[in-house]
Length: 252
Image (cartoon, rainbow, N blue to C red; front, side, top):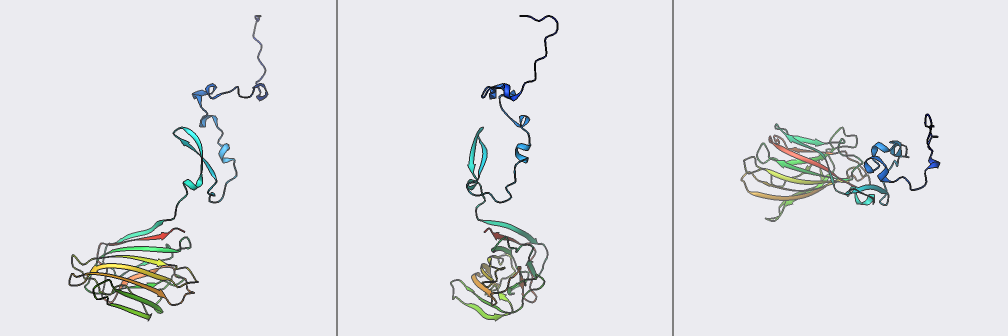
């Protein structure tokens, strides 16, 4: 039947007029539902999780164009080390300090890698801890053991020292006489066990003789928290230009 005059305007279409499963992807522009068809509140309107996801919490991913679900356990960060600070000593200085900017409750244990050269011959390298207020270095109450590996096994030790001695045979300053050190700084914020350091260092002495040493130390008061440490040379000693370091925190 035809119409004479204007064709009547049809009534507005409502959701009740659409049968289930009638609209398919092929009926939608671009043959797919994309961001142009979605309301942003589909995501922003949801309740925030507000915590680290559990291992079995699920995410939606596109696997080569196919949507799939995936447990969070597949992508969560695994334990490891985080670089907290690094630097170059570009002019001679007798010390450098790691402080509470980097020693925080985020980490229980830390590692320092230090490499470089002494600016003067045969001067002892030392260590002291920072106090809990991070406004002074502690100058008493250390125990330490440091000694050569192999050779004659010589060493030094103390149970009541004003500083921790890091080198048994001190470094020379000539071209072949630089040093490399790895030091672990353990439990500095614990008030249950003493803060301790374990380190290994290799260098060459003032006669260019290769040296390999290791040591351990602790602060004798196990109830103290410490906010870092200072590494420094004894009287008249400096780190040479070009010494550098990295300081890491171990993830819990």
